[in-house]
Amino acid sequence: MTAKVLLVDDTEFYQRAYKNKLLPEGFLVTTANNGVEALKCLSQEMPDIILLDLMMPVMDGFKVLQAVKADARLQKIPVIIFSAKGASEEVEQAIKLGAADFLIKATTTPNKVLEKIRQVLGQAASQKPGGA
Image (cartoon, rainbow, N blue to C red):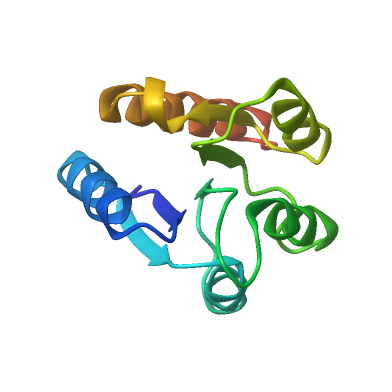
């Protein structure tokens, strides 16, 4: 099964870099430039995992995370925060809001992000009834 990733980031560099990393690994990648675009994507298509930036125009990542976790249809989708920010309060807030994990852009390589996505998807699959 091909996993679908929704990559939400307002920086084209990160969108391109992670699309280039994930596509050859067999992931389908949809991108959104801000939180409003992300919610629009989610209303049309259900990804298996969301890679979410915090600092974005229009609607920030915390608001997107809250919206996802408040929606019964979306709340089971794991969300990995992928941000330039990384103060302990922000990490704590993201985890409290339901994020599966928190990665800091400056210290996380594309390979590490790929590994984390696989790990979180593996955990999500093992929590589904009858899942692998």
